[in-house]
Image 1 (cartoon, rainbow, N blue to C red):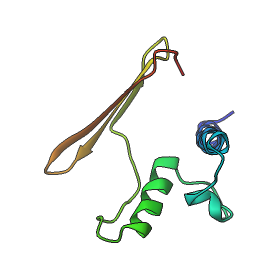
Image 2: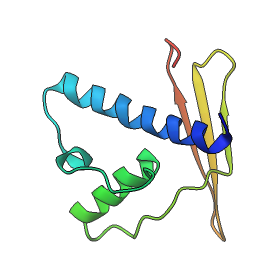
Image 3: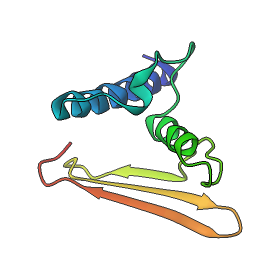
Length: 101
């Protein structure tokens, strides 16, 4: 598989995992109230941010997410993402799951 197919598969997997969480909770809402747009899917965080922006208009506009650094630990139990914010520093996200991903 080329890099584009791998990225599309990764994004589709994120949507499937999010759908699985919703189904377990017993309700569908947000991005699952309408069919997905034609063409390739946007990254899930970007789609969720856009949906949130529609519901709360006072939030600033949400655009594409371009990670500066994305790193997963070898055991899959930690994830780090750093995004550069021009003129303001960086946004850092770290997720930890003791059971691994």
